[in-house]
Amino acid sequence: MKIAFLGLGRMGRELVLHLLAGGHDVTVWNRTASATQASAQRGARVAHNAEEAVTDAEVVLTALFGPDTVRDVVTEADLPISEGALWIDITSVSPADADSFASWARAHRIRYAHSPVVGSVGPARAGTLSVILGGDAEAVAAATPIVSLWAAPDRLRTYATPAKAATAKLVANLTVGVAMQAFVEALRLGHAGGLSTEEVITALDRTTLSVIKDLKGETVLNERFADTQFSANLLHKDTRLMLRTSLTPLPAVTAVFASLEDAIRSGRGEDDFSVMAADDRS
Image (cartoon, rainbow, N blue to C red; front, side):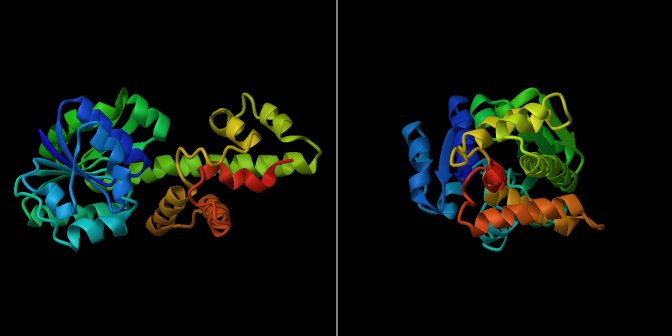
């Protein structure tokens, strides 16, 4: 199948490799050309611009930074995706954004499915991501064999609309951010009472924070924030979407947003989101 893949950030670079391993004819494009090197070395063609990339593509996948970038590259640019092609947007967006992109696709006679992923670089590389897929039945059926290339077999969830898929992704990432904020506050409390970081981490064993402790405890303990699996910038963008989408206040998400703002202001936006805990080590 002839596939165009637009957006080669940390996640996109991993997903392209699964497409190539699946025998697909893949053309890639990224605003920063150096990000295409790994894909090219594995057999992908590199396009000079997005328009060239989508020429004659049967499937177009977008894994861009956020909804504003999708608008800039696709909808406001009227990207010439072929009539009848399938557009799978992996970008984390709000439900209103997903509705807007679906409307644009319908107007251009393009099939549209929204398929964000839940997970980081490691599961992406292993093909064990949680994958969310939303759209009409025909688009979902067409997209399923493609997104299944990076999904754990029991972690592909489908929804009747792109907006519901977008909401499900924000809900999933809310839990990540709020759990990390709780970890940060546990560190603050523990340090105030004389516990070391290692002792706080031990105290969290078999608690409701044990998952985030197991996931990020070693990173926090050893200050390996530059080993980015999911960046502070990306989670900051997602928390902004959460706050804009909810009809009522989200105090815990607001606290996460503030912690990420602090990290970004200190120049650590491209570090792993666990950098939220950087100032809370003993």
